Length: 186
Length: 109
Image 1 (cartoon, rainbow over the protein chains, first blue to last red):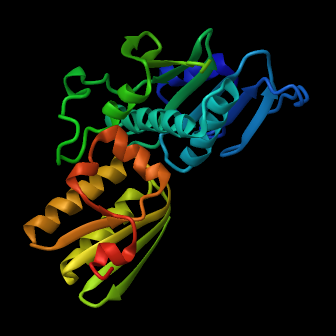
Image 2: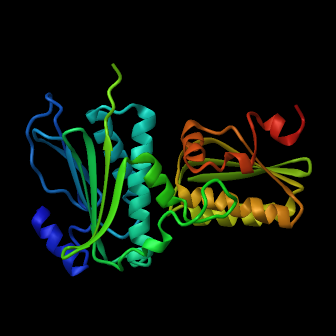
Image 3: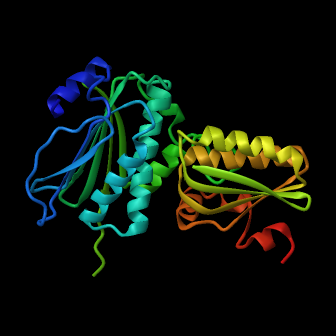
């Protein structure tokens, strides 16, 4: 299943049983030999390309989330963020995935999410595609931050970590896009 | 995620290790809610937490509110860098009693 096929699967809203949790990761580390392989459920692999790019297709289950967080954090480190910022970026991506699983797919496990993280001209861009219910904009960052109410913190975390966040409904499904600029210290 | 519980006088100390996320937070939540009524003070050691997301933070807030309802003390100690960062992002650190060591958390320092 390539990216285009995965997008079709997302549009159809189904997770392919054989590919629903495949993970591929592309980095520009020079010492890596160019490799291309298909990954079985739950595996994480790497291939060399010119740009830093991570494409993940996963079902709405939680068991590969640790691997996804690790891969996102590694990509952020390769682009140039420090350890603390890498953890925060991985957290923001995880919160976005949680929102899709809980609110778009209502915890159903037979659905597909596509995550793409790629190096942009000035930092990192994250895109999530799903075919669940459209996000309720009235609930995004709706609660007051810092109060003693549980719930609704995820969108605040995403907003604080990332520089730009958008929630769109497209023909391919729901599209979440977030970006962050890499601010290099002089 | 691993959770262990031990008694220290009238208090209970809960140790958590690993990741608290959408997949593990239901067990985390159930353990804390089941432990809270049996102790005058519940001290939660967060030093070995590698990762916590908003579902874990929401659980901590829920337990805090339940402790207030039950007239119990719910305190945190040994916050790992990962936990501190999420507390900073969500601005919730001010609503908890946070200590550095177990002795301080139990009031025996």
